[in-house]
Amino acid sequence: MNEAATIWDGIRPRSPRDVVARHQAQIGRLGVLAATENLASPTDWAFEEAHHVVVLHLGGRLDRMDCEFSVGPSGPAMPARGDIWMIPAACRYAALAQGERAEFVELSVPTALLADAPLAARVKHRDEFLFRAGARLAGLVRGPDDDLARMAAHEAGDAIERHLRTHYGYRERGARHRALSASERNRLADAVRGQLDAEHSLAALAALVGMEVRRFTDAFHDAFGLSPWQYVMRARLDEAARRLWHGAEPVTEVALATGFASPSHFATAFARRFGVPPSRYRAAAR
Image (cartoon, rainbow, N blue to C red; front, side, top):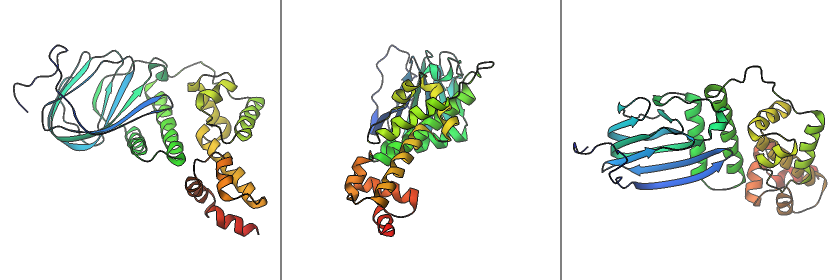
């Protein structure tokens, strides 16, 4: 790195970023950015956000990197695969990096997700579950946008949210964990099964039982043993299997009626669940 290059001080112009690939999505309450950047020239990275930022280093090679927090660890810090940087909300962070390239995923985490618990600034932090789940989420965000990918992305996002709340948020001692009543469980099941081709967002499902999303996701998992996204997918596939077994609708019509964007996505999901493609499943019923 050019010895004259110094960490961005908020005054000098930032150096340009040479982006090779960039994919962005909102998964539940998490903002997800998967990126690869060339670092042949000194490159500035800087954050000062109203939300927490969690950066997972997926790969690449850096020759040098210096970082500085307004409150937290500062100095040289060379990221290796699996290292995690945690940048608290309202904390100024700047880094200057140079090398070949870096592949990483940034997670934007609302402070409310952690029940407004303070997040400590960290560099080269290790959390195997968080890294593996984040790497999987990055791969899904970079890949094709289809029913299965969306379901898998939301499952990974749900798992990350639960992990962050459990390990980095306040433990709500003395607070009662509200369980879903029998009538609420029935209301949710009827809403999903009554409109299998609807989106069924977390916010919409939580509103049906008057809960905020953060608490609803845990309560739903406790009640049904599945995440909301897993439950919706299972309901779609169960209804599709019933139609194939008892009806004569073309497979394409069954796929669209049960909320799948295309017959190919439907066939892949169906085979994963039942072990055979839809056509063979139907043939077995004849």
